Image (tube, rainbow, N blue to C red; front, side):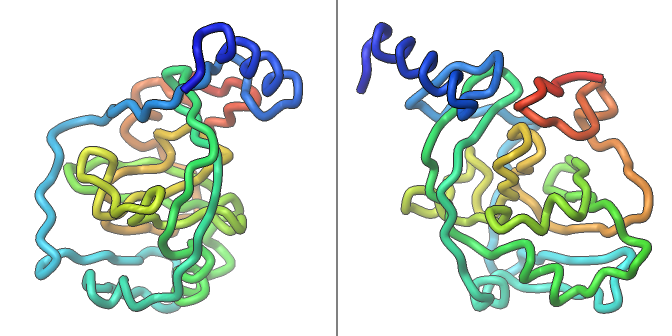
Length: 200
């Protein structure tokens, strides 16, 4: 644990190096923020689907998803509400694995995340192909708790955390960008913390 003086020193240091984005503050805690109630998880009925502009749409059970190749990623996590949590260790399935299996058509340029409760958010396909983007079911090193998005959430470290949707159930590959839940309410369509792209 660090005191307020040490925290301020670290914030200045990391801001000067570019690791801590402008307007953000370091935290050791992991605040819980989301829209709606935490959904129940039944591994027997849970399904993850991929649809839209892909050559091979598919659906996976929880058991099938767990059998996919796994990766581990260490990354910082930046919330639009101005806190940042450093050095998170995530485990799960690389988005590249999902994309390779689905084979998007040349027209596919964006991906819409679909989640329990009707929540959606958008991201460019190219962004999801970065090495550190994954569908995570584990965090440092325990299974994700329901309030933090378990059993499965997207992790896109270079964008604000609302783009790392909780309780994800599907991916829709589309030609044109489309606003999701928060984007329809004025949040930025891209959400880059380094440029403080919080709102439109």
